[in-house]
Amino acid sequence: MLNRRTFIASAAAAGLASSRSLAQPQAPRRYGYPAGTRPFGPEVYRERRRRLMERMKGGVAVVHGPPSVDLGATTAPIDRPGSSSDFTYLTGLVDEGGAALLLAPGERTYREFLFLPTVNPEHDRWEGTRLLLGSELRARTGFEKISRIGALGTTLAQIAARAGEMRYIGPLASPDAAVPRELDLYGRVVARVPGTRIVNNHGLVHAMRLVKEPRELELMRRAIAATERGMRAAMRAARPGMREFELKTIIESEFRAAGARRLAFPSIVGVARNSAVLHYMGGDNELRSGDLVLADIGAEFDFYAADITRTFPVDGRFRPDQRRVYETVLRAQEAAARQLRAGAVYEDLTRAATNVIEAAGHRDDFWHGLGHFVGLDVHDVGDYAQPLPAGAVLTIEPGIYLPERDFGIRIEDEYLVTPSGNEHLSRSIPRTVAEIEAAMAR
Image (cartoon, rainbow, N blue to C red; front, side, top):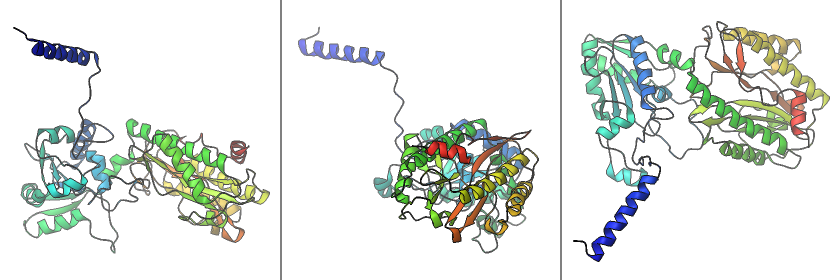
């Protein structure tokens, strides 16, 4: 029999249950690290690892992640050391520093292993709780076999003894650079496990990364769209009396308004003579009438980068001498783009652009390479000596730099290689003299 108190309690519970039944289901909160794979689900990264092991055929390979991760960073790591972006590509884990991946296509039961740093409760009080080994961690990461990083060396030695080969799939390093962590580890195993050897497979992952998946291209298009928003805002806002850092602030605010959470690289905004400094990082110089501003900027959207450069006049109109140089740079870019298709080689694009610049008498005023691949890294992986495959994305960015005349001009756009030519991904950003002057008209 219900008394008043139990009746009220049961009625309240029934009402609460009724209201819950009408509400939309709530996704579980993702406390603890790693929070999961990003920007795609675990199945995407599992399939990438399967394809890589199919290409490896045998042996065993280790890929280290970044030694540490700054979860509060507003600028992406630039030219990540070692193979840490390969780790991101293969695992989707972006919030666990000090992790490693081991792939063993010849093993019978487990062929992929994830090694995570040791849990430190004192450290976690400051940085956030890290998950213990178990079903939740397996579900979030997509790995069935997860251990702590201390077990990596022993596991590698045991599998290498059976496989006989350790395959190096990271980037090559110059002789004066630090030995990659994977090669250092392999060398110590070779010294302790007789009969094992190291095999160079450094191009396997990079060949996969070079050809962008449709889901990757969608994120890159969104990064370009955010970058366009920032560039157009800069063109509208530029006026005499501003300082470079004010223009940079406007650009980066528009990135965030478009949904981009980080910069792909530190923004370059240089006026007058500073526009002829390739990686200018200052920001306190004043914009004056008659000057040119060079803005080399890129938003990052869900870890995929954009990289666009425009050069535009502070007061909205190019001087005749500036226009002549600008149109030479534009012709050089277009000459290179006409060469770009599947099967083309990067040096052919470079020659086409350089011929235009040389014919205009500015060969010694073009100081850098013609462009680079773009993807997870703003300077993404790929072999420039090999024919370009359909699906690769690269920049074409010729420039002419005349510091003695207080200006430099660079035009940089992103292009997707297609079987019959290319798609100009950043074509909607004002680029010709007429388009820029129209966008700046006030």
